[in-house]
Image (cartoon, rainbow, N blue to C red; front, side):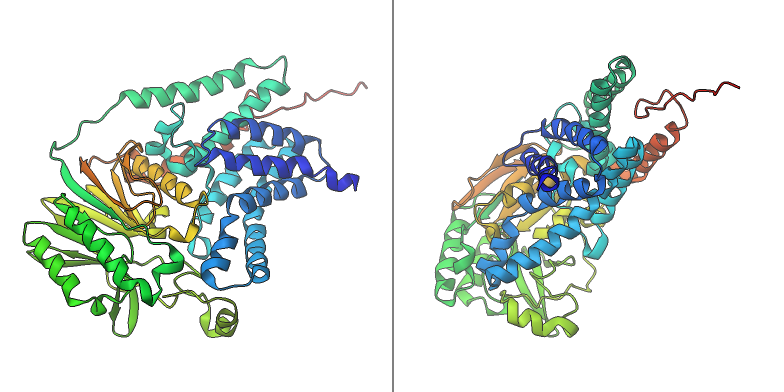
Amino acid sequence: MTRIVSFLPAIILGGLLVLAFKPFNLLFIPFIVFPILFFILKKTESPLINAFLFGFSFFSIGLYWLIFCIVNYGGASWFSAIIICLLFYIFLGLFFLPFALIKKNAFAHAIILFTLLEIIREYLFTGFPWLSLGFSQVSNPFINQYFSIVGSHGITMIILLISALGFKVIENKNKKVIPTIGIMIIILVNFIFSLTEDKPDNEKKLKISLLQGNVSQDTKWNENTVMHQIEGYLNLLDSAKGDLIIFPETAIPLLYANYPNYFHQKINEKIKSNKTIILGSILEIDGNYLNSAVIKSEKEDQFYFKKHLVPFGEYFPLSNYLGFIYRKILNIPFSNLTPSRIENQLIRYDNFYLGLNICYEDIFKASYDVFLPQANLFINLTNDAWYDRSPAAHQHVQIAQARAMEFNRPIIRATNTGVTAYINKKGEIVNSLPTFSEGVLEIEVLPNNLPSFFSKFGYFPLYIFLLIIALCEKFKSFPLLNRKKKVKSKP
């Protein structure tokens, strides 16, 4: 019993770390949690278990809403949903094992390995970078300028670096100067970056209308509500004033080919008044169902096809082998989507280039890379109604804020239930609609195509910084080391 109680501090700390993310947004939490965790890991006889339990607690509390999504909208039983999610949380908790190295005072190794594993998490098994530590600091003026230099995973490195230096300040009563100077240099360089403000390459603003239909997920795919949903969106369309009008992901719960004629007529009437409309739709091409966006204007129709589908939500991995299990456990509408093999092109609009992504795609760096350097503006179509009133939708928009800073581009989000928002290139939410409300967000957006350091060089600068940290271990003065002096034995 005593042994079990000894693990409670790490479990509690993992849960507290979630408070750093939206909607709580307690930015200082990581800089308190990690030094305490480091103290625990140095004293414990079970560093691996404590490190794992910290990560397991962090993800199970931060992603608790996955269980409700699977039960409420996936058709699974509570037992099945809990088992599936527990296995997922256990897997994610393993990414925190590098912190066990703190026991041996290997702070630099722990920081390097954890940062690299967080990058790997963005790509492994289709990737899941949700709750990457760096995303929590989008509003932190002391370090958020680094987003444009080393990206969100670089911010993770900086969080851990500051936390480790802070721990050294507390631990070494007689050696506080060097770690303190290290923290001050990190913050000072951040403010130097903030002084180098780039000037926009144009002053023309785009007038855009973002439609938010506020259709709950439990009624969205109900046949009896389809006409009501169509009428609701047509009313929003009539009131939209922007030159570019954007519907959210799968706004109308029908195949695009099955939209009623009067809906198409309303769309065509609108574009005749020199409007362009982006409509999130499901298209059927050669027997495959594609999550898509149709861009309609008087000149031509353009298309975007979602490539990075949500596993277990839009498609089932290894369905040829596990199809029977999926059919018995889950029942999700349009869960048989196909990733498009059609190469997506930049969307041309009014002498600008638009980079599109749909829902879950916007959490991945690669979804932006494909449209650079030409893209002036990024647009995301999303349906976060799956998450109900959990923190997930707020965590989602926080990721978009980080991506805006990384790529020095504004991002606009048209969502079904929120958060519908305009995020400027600095990652600030300029305008947004209240969540779970119906309405049109009218915004004026200033596009930009001046590259950031991160957009040009990707993770390369971060790898250089990690290499420098590794090389610094050769120097005794490095503040993350606590070398013991060798005592020569007397003859």
